[in-house]
Length: 195
Image (cartoon, rainbow, N blue to C red; front, top):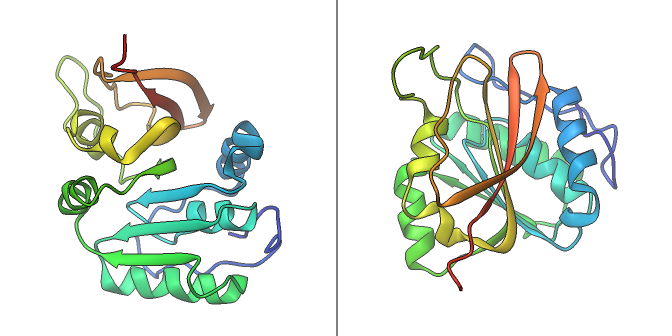
């Protein structure tokens, strides 16, 4: 796993040992960032379920000005911070918070924090034929504070398994889906509340 392009392009990233983390594959990240293009330049980025931090770090490498990674595991958070050092980013470019995503979102919303791009490639859910998904991806779609932390005209990129059939609430408008094997990446923006 490596940074694909930008100032840290080619840097090899570390991943925590074991099966607790499923890093977003290089080919999927490349497709996501090809689709984003220049949108990441100058952007404030939020990554939920940080894992290795690969999505945040790729965004910083391509010109994002700040990235916040939310990661529940302190061990994984240390790996994200080490990866940032390997990339030689400025000390204040990346912030890692060790906390639960569902605790972090209300705090970010209450603080008025907003981001231009939000990444979430959480642990995959089970196949859900004939019933509503219980996956992290569906929980994020349903989360009442997530729209508040995305700027107007911002983009949310949500990863999930092909077998996880999601219901997209009216809060969100899907503008693109990238399909790579079992990995699907949905590009969403919030529906404007202004008339």
